[in-house]
Amino acid sequence: MTIYNCIIIDDDEIDRLTVIAYTKKFEQLKVIGVFNSAEAAYPFMETNRVDVLFLDIDMPKVSGLAIRKKMSHIPACIFITAHPEHAVDSFELDTLDFIVKPLNTERFTKAIQRLDAFMELKHKAALFESHLGTEAIYLKEGHTQTKVNLFDVLYLEALKDYTLIITAHKRHCVLSSIGVLLKEPHFKTFARVHRSYAVQKIAVKKITTYEVELLNSTCIPIGRSYKDNLQLLL
Image 1: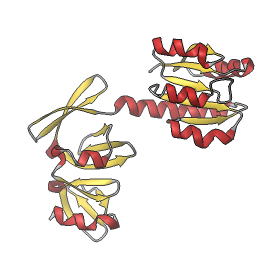
Image 2: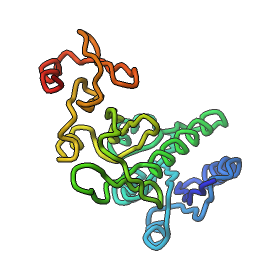
Image 3: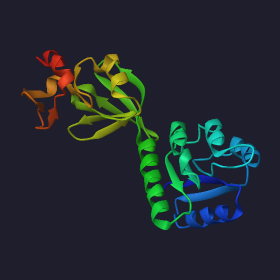
């Protein structure tokens, strides 16, 4: 199990103790610092690895929003506040979740489930390290590198800021949007047929009015605005 280093920043002592109590219910959460202000927390955050911020918003001098903006390099931020009107502003700062006080077990559990899913995706996301000619790419997944033959790739699937690279036997996750990926020379043999999908030309078995059928019988929908791209598959 992966352990996440967490810090809690809240100017209310009772609320700090409450968050500490809830984090103790989850063995993947390790609270390494508890602070009542940004001034107290900044030196610690600058010298320690922090994975998760549990932040109040309405605090004297420096707000939780300002803290998150300055500490945007920390992977995950969960706001816990009594002021729901700040929700919109918070999600402009890469907020993982926004919980309105008072805390309850069900809502906190959902936030940690979301955290687990996010951190797992982040950990597994493959980054391009290098390529060998135009036939293969090397993907970094965790601490290992995987060689993927481009001709084994059936299609690409968009997943927000990530792209899934689908072969007949495995799914790889790349930290890059599908639009950016398709501009790479490695993917010149792919055609985008939908907002969320691009298919390998040699993997196409049949094209109908509404979908593209691949050699492994997977059917990919055709987006209305991408019909002209079907010519690239012929």
